[in-house]
Image 1 (cartoon, helix red, strand yellow):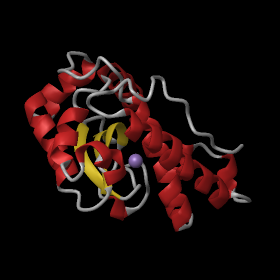
Image 2: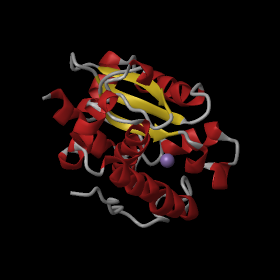
Image 3: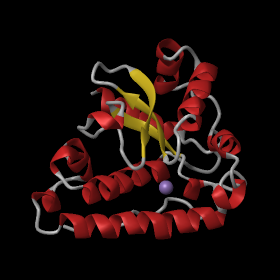
Amino acid sequence: MAFELPKLNYAFNALEPHIDAKTMEIHHGKHHQAYVTNLNNAIKGSDAENMSIEDICKNISKYPAAVRNNGGGHYNHTLFWEIMSPNAGGVPSNEVGKAIETELGGFEKFKTDFAAAGATRFGSGWAWLCVKADGKLCVCSTPNQDNPLMDIAEAGCKGTPILGMDVWEHAYYLNYQNRRPDYMNAFFNVINWNKVNELYLQAKK
Ligand code: MN
């Protein structure tokens, strides 16, 4: 079955003023759609046609670069839309919030480390909050459309992503131009911590 572009759970303008409607419309409708279309073309006739996007990422070393780039793009953006929402942000007090306190040195330290992961990623990539194999949280980043599910050392970190921040220029350039730090600050206002917590509890199982 071919992969499809997931619907957004909110309007393109719902994340304003933090992320503008035009950026959302192009990012979802053009960029993510292109990853989906190119992924479907890249897996045609292979066993990946019958696999989940998570399983494709976990076995990405077996597939050509087009599957890695577009499969990563599809997985990463699907997560990205889900972990953002209007009327969100703040400091989480749920289970993942407690784990950030005890395992990552507190929310302010997490925020600094997460922003640093995005800021120091040269060129395009993603910053992540992940659950490692031992059930503990970690903050890391990956280049291009790689992610921590992938079975390749170049991804640079390993775990189940529960929060991802897109630091490709296409995620912020219309509104923030070269000011990636301003975009990253704004991103904290749209993090849907209820969803992140749901993913945290699933990943811990
Ligand atoms: Mn993107």
